Length: 349
Image (tube, rainbow, N blue to C red):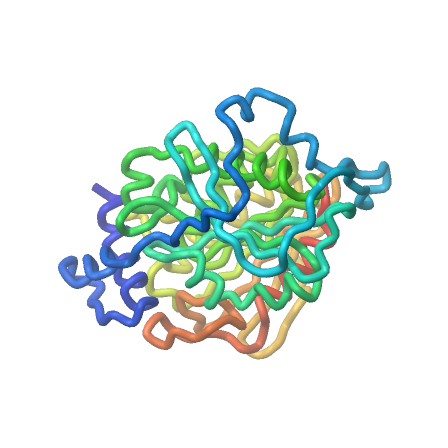
């Protein structure tokens, strides 16, 4: 089936990320990533919500209301949190799931704080995504809570439709997991519910696209990297600001798409968001430096924007992140991490 074909090539990406040699046409070598364990659960981490949490109003206790002008408000009764990384366990209808939560050193439990969800690629882990994207430094400087959720399966994956692995094959409810994760974050932290954003690499980028479609009431804006739209129908409840990064020489998720594995082109993915967001007129160049060019549709409904940052000759990589030469060129002419945070700051709900 088509998912198997796409997952096999992405398994090689996972092997490369873990330092294991792999041929994209050698399924046996792709299986080497099976040995990668999921992150350990830190018992001292915040407790999972009770089975009644999903139907109660308990999570709202941590959800900071916003002022009419969109500025953040404050919280009361929230506990202080240690700076750094902690693995949280979240109860879902399909069992316990985990996420690595990075608290910036300036976190104040009385002040509402933005959250960025950063989803790893197929076969990846939160710690690999942390190392790839170099986003912790941005979190520490800007003061947002940074969350790296963990996928499922022996080769961890997300159900983003056409991609990837056992999560997609079993139609796992990863959107539901993200909702439960947000409930847990809002119950434990002073979260600004109008400033929750999603990004991800590859399979994680596909999931960010899906969240923009199916969780637009809780995700303010998305910024997929090397991931296109993987579901056939997308009907968000509101216009969703989108910033996408993609290399023209991506060997895994081709810039021009691959109908054989149900991957649309980047152009078609962006055109879909332009239509959904009611954007008018042509795109304008909003960034140009070396191999990186960003084009933005700015006249969209309710202040939304749709931006595509194309990396000429770029591979299946995170612009400005840790290079992986076997996956193609990594641009140093733009930092996806810096650029998306600037974009996110303009697009609270």
